[in-house]
Image (cartoon, rainbow, N blue to C red; front, side, top):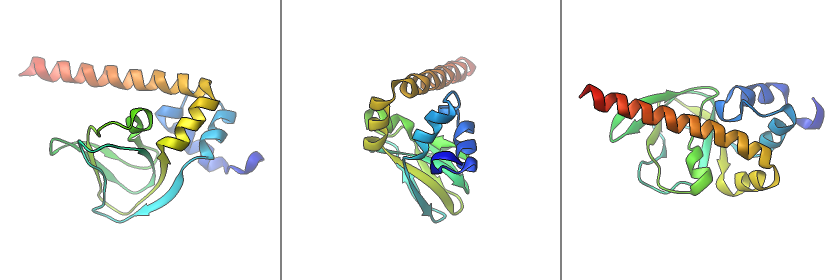
Length: 148
């Protein structure tokens, strides 16, 4: 594959909702980022309320997401979480723990910020996805409040 990025890695990135609107060229730029890491089962990757400075792309394995101690999501291959920390390095909105050994690519806020500064089209595409996620979360919260 041209530019040294394996096709399977580009395919995986293209399936990540956050990057799904990116061109192949943009995906190659994203693929240059991150550090592949292995985590054992039971490892806490993020803790609700603590500041975050990285995001995770799960390559293999399973992790669970908890808000206020309640499980709200499960992440597997191709799932991306922690992206808000890439933008504002603010407090985590959830705790994520591995349920099995997990292979992931970890993106730092610093390297990701550099990409966004150098490639505004990628930033715009990601902001659209983040806005959609926020709308979905707000809609879900409204539906839960109406049910009570």
